[in-house]
Amino acid sequence: MVIKVEVVELKFAKVKVVKVKVAEVEVVELEVVKVKVVELEFAKVKVVEVKVTEFEVVDLEVVEVKVVELKFVKVKVVEVKVTEVEVVELEVVEFEVVEVMVTKVEVVELKLESQVKVSEVEVVELKVGKVKVVEVKVVKSEVVKLKVVKLEVVEVKLFDLKVVEVEVVELKVVEPEDVE
Image (tube, rainbow, N blue to C red; front, side):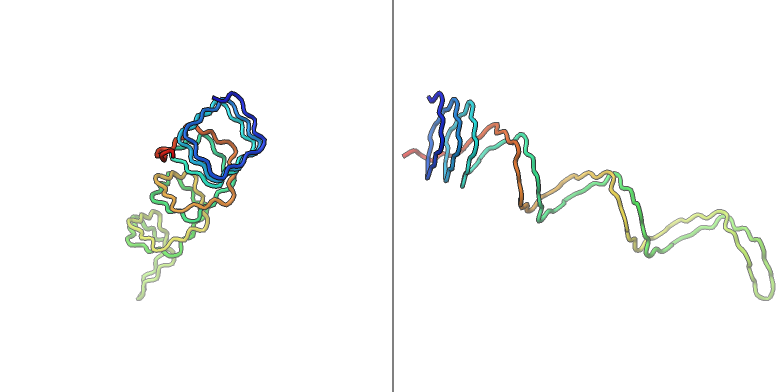
């Protein structure tokens, strides 16, 4: 059991660790090419700089990750439920009125001759029964509340990802190889 180890510079080409228990380690610079850890237990570790070329994580629980820039290349939205939408500007291009019911018509001036000529007709009350909107063009729409029920991300590319704070709760390698 190691009580305290201070490493200034340490380079590994290929390391296979079976079981290591470390009480306190301070690493200044560490470059690891390929490491397979079967069981590793740390009490207190302060790592200044670590360069890992290849590693395999089986079970990893991340408590807090801060993503600075995230770019989605291909995202498939399966189901979206919109609770409240406020339409700021709406332009109706074409609509077709199927049924109109006029309840009250007031005729101000009516001349009956050989041909009937109505000068002015005022519709006091108009009830539209069925209106079929053929084409609606939304010019400006503002979504106030949007609830995404199911979102399936097909492909994500991380261009600039800065992890500020990561706390590893449990890290286990499930299938260790036999020690030769």
